[in-house]
Amino acid sequence: MPAAPSIAVDKLRIRRGGCVVLDEISLSVASGRVTGLLGPSGSGKTTLMRAIVGVQIVESGSITVLGEPAGTPPLRWKVGYMTQNPAVYGDLTVRENLHYFARILAAAPENVDEVLEMVNMTAFGDRVVNRLSGGQRARVSLATALIGKPQLLVLDEPTVGLDPVLRRDLWRTFNDLAGQGKTLLVSSHVMDEADHCHDLLLLREGQLVATGTPADVRAKSGRQDLDEAFLALINEEVV
Amino acid sequence: MSFRATFATARRVLNQLRRDPRTIALMLLVPVVLVFLLEQLFADNRVVFQRIGGPLLGLFPLIAMFLVTSITMLRERVSGTLERLMALPLAKLDILAGYGLAFALVAALQATLVSAVAFGFLGLHTQGPSWAVVLLAIANAILGMALGLFVSAFARTEFQAIQFMPAFILPQILLCGLFTPRSQMAGWMHVLSDLLPFTYAYDALHRATALGTFDGRFALDLTVTVGVTVLALALGASTLRRRSG
Image (cartoon, rainbow over all chains, first blue to last red):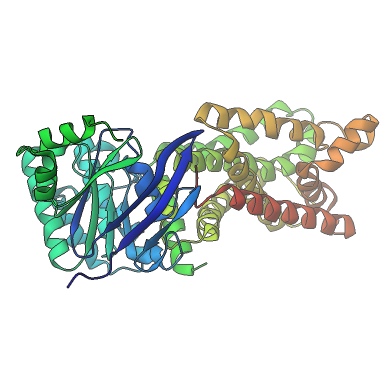
């Protein structure tokens, strides 16, 4: 029996800098699953995620997150957000960053060690963030999203710039979290990551071109390779 | 607003400062060196040093906090950490109060150090008690912080934020009565001087140091200083937006 969706977007329209970035899109994200938000850069993925966490000005339409309108105060406890550019304090150590976010969320200090382990950064806890590589910084940013053990995770390109082994590990972690009943919305512009997701949302120029499981997408496009399937769907003229 | 989030923010800001010992050293030592230079400059004219030395003790923290706050807040806006904080259970007031708390602590340290040197080694005398100077210096530091926070919303880059110092602070120093008594200013300058917050901050310091009079005018000075601080904080808070375009 399918549970109520964690995210329900209805006729969402967003304008940024005079251009329509999302044009009346409607979608839903199922609870307890990993949903991949895919699309070329500039397709509106980040804007959609910003709207879901409630930091984006919306022109029209509605977004319901965990049963409440997006951006309402109670949701700030329940939704973990990882921004596309690492939003951490470069002049602090990894642990100092995590402790700050933990304190804001009234999370147990033990969570710090736990999330460091999850993102494979235990060895770097006492390093100053500015001295880390880009991929390591991204993992610290991911750890700050996980620290409050949120019910819903909105992760904007969490695997970008990571090596294949780390990427595989992270996708495993995401699937484990979904196994524990958490909902994840994960964006990526790398199509071959789609197979790690339960459900897919394919965005192109502010419009939804395909939704469904990876199998659905393969069937719809008639291609076995997801990369090719997406290219086919993206290049298809939307009538 | 929550004490937990406010204290967490204050602690985070202090940690950031702690990781930057050069800034701490500059913030603490530059005022001391400047007061020493001033004392040497007026070695033959002690009256001038006695007149402007006291008020300057209170104005240094204001300038330092204005600079530090406008830059750190700009960094929060540009680096995306502010957007991240806005998606967390943290009131805008928690951020502002956290910054205020952390910087007030630094300002107290700065004011105490420069006052100790000025009163202890450089022979500066004040009519009022010296702790009054330190307290006024802290109040001014918070005013500087509030103003810095507000103007940071109008800067896109750190270069612009730095330029707000001469644009925003220098005219106020020129017109506050430190260089020329306000009674000798041309009419329009006097009116302009009446409208600037530094005038009141300076006057309070002048009364506490040179005159030792804590009268009705002193109370007005304090009221204006605190009032402008609250106003700037409120305006600063209104520039922290949960949602942006």
